[in-house]
Length: 233
Image (tube, rainbow, N blue to C red; front, side, top):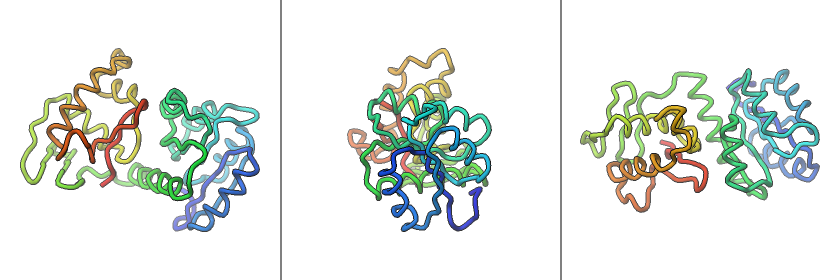
């Protein structure tokens, strides 16, 4: 973490007074400190001067669109950004995640849901800032990125090069939603960013090899209309 250590600092960039009144007790009552900014420009200033551990960002700000704020932040910081927005369309979620947001929560949301998303974002940031885990276990699945080895119930799993690249990209960001376009660019290259059928085919193949019940996946999870994520260890 980049803030004051044990007590994470949350920067909330939000202009709705009622939402701010809801968030402050929710966050401070669960071990977070909170600072607020009511415009995108103020949010950028606070992010630069206060070094928050995580940013909660509304897209509908009075001066700058939240996507523009996300892009500006990503020019110089990898601080996790969790979007909180009333825009619930898949296209809005994809745009925010592709702009650099780590997660997206649609209003209205519950306190437990928000806290869970914050914990995931902070854990991922800790892995990126520290030593990124090269090996971890999810259920009976063991992924070793350093040795490029995947075991299920102790037995080696034979993956094609593309299957392995897809799994490895998800494994580098456990718990984080990766959009279709992100995965296609990383695994197949920029020219394949629109070929979403590639993903469906290879994700189905991976699930057949890694899931106990491929029809009800518990490890390789779908975010409908947005992308996929690997369940956290």
